[in-house]
Image 1 (cartoon, rainbow, N blue to C red):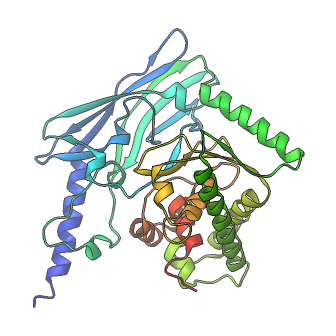
Image 2: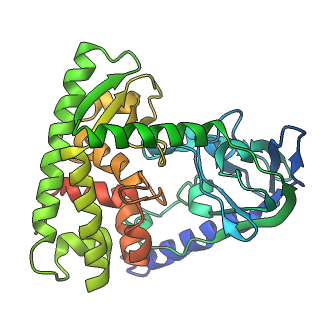
Image 3: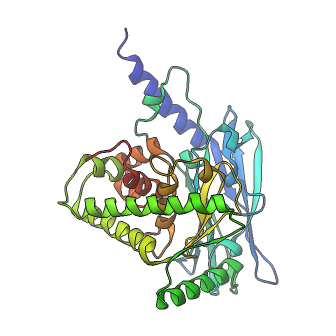
Length: 364
C-alpha cells in the first residue's frame, strides 16, 4: 500500500480548490442612484477557467438578498448590514447555479434596501467573500471525505470597488429594525419575557418550538457553567473555538452570557411563515428577538447535533445585541476546520457557537 497516496490526494484537492476560486472573476458595475435615492449595483460572475463552476444560488439573488457578500461604506465608515442571516442545511450541488467555461452570470442588488445608507456621503461598494462560500467544490477522484475535512487555505474573492454619491435613504429594513428595537425595549421595561408566535404557527409547531426553546435554555446553562470553570485549552473549547487564549475564552463566555440572558429574560417571537426545506431558520440581526423558523427546523431533533435547541442558540448569536455572529461556514466539519485555521473567525461564526452548546459527541 502506497502511504504517499493520501498526501498526494490532499494536495490535489488544495490545487483544485485554489484553481476554482481563481477561475471565478467577480466585477461590479457602476452604482445607479435613482431619483428616490435607491442604489442598485450589478454583480457579474465570469468563469475564466476550463471547467464548469457551481455558484451557490444565494450569491445570485433574483429578488431578496440572502447573503452578505458586499462590503459597503459611506465616507469610509462601514455601513451596517440589515439583511437576513441564515442557518442552512450543509449546501450541496443542488443549491447552485452552473457557470460554464467563458460564461457569465449577472445579479442586481438594491444596496439601499439591505445596508444602512441613511446618511448622505460618498458610497463605496466592493464584493468580498471566499471561494469556499461562493462555490460548491466536488471532491477529485481518490480524495476521501476525511481528507477533505482537513484545514485548507481558502482563497479570497474580491471585486473592483465602485462608488457614487448618495444623498441618503432610510430602507424599510432599517425602519423595521428601529421599530423592533423600540418594541423589545418597551417589553423589557415592562418585564415581559417568554415566547410569542407569528406567521400562523400551528399548535404542533408551537409545541415543538417550545420544546426547542427549553432545549436551547439547557444548552445555554451548560455552556455558561462550563465557561465559568477554569479557563484552559480543554478539548471541547479547542474543537469549536481553536487555540486557547484567555482573551478568546472571555469572548466566548461573554457571548453565552448574552445568549442565556436572551433565553431567560427577553421577549422571543417565533415566526413559522418560512417553508424552505434547505433552511433551518433565519433572523435579521438588528431586529431582536424574532426568529423565523423554516422547513428543516421541523424535522430536526429537539437536542443534539443540528437540533431545534441548537438552531435557536445559533440564531440568537446573530443578533447584534447578543454576539453579532456571521456565517463563515456551515456544518460540523467546516466549523472544526475554522477553529483550527482561524480562532477569531470561529468566535464570530454562529455554527461554532451552536456546536459548542450542543456538545455532541460530548467532550470535556
